[in-house]
Amino acid sequence: MNKQANIVYVLSGYAKCATTSNEKYKLGNKHSIGLLTTDKNYQENIKKLKSFIKGLGWESIMFCMVEEVEDINSLSNSVLISSFNRAQKNGQSLVVNDQAITVH
Image (cartoon, rainbow, N blue to C red; front, side):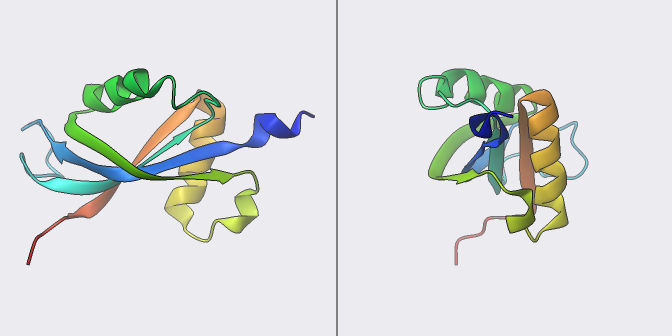
């Protein structure tokens, strides 16, 4: 198997909730997000990836960090593990932190 095919790129950042139909998140709140993608050319396709996130009800999307993960065993969080599996199956997966970002 091609080793490159197992790599998932984890783009970490934040986005603002842009939909009132989401009971879990309040309109206008910013949340930490993680986009897991198998797209090796994620830098060139960032506009397409942001469109995917906007389609899920988020705006003002910013990415701060990227990490390459090829070994699912290096992930200790069950949410990230399931998102990793979804990304490998579907090409991408979004994880949103339930707690809003607050400024003190």
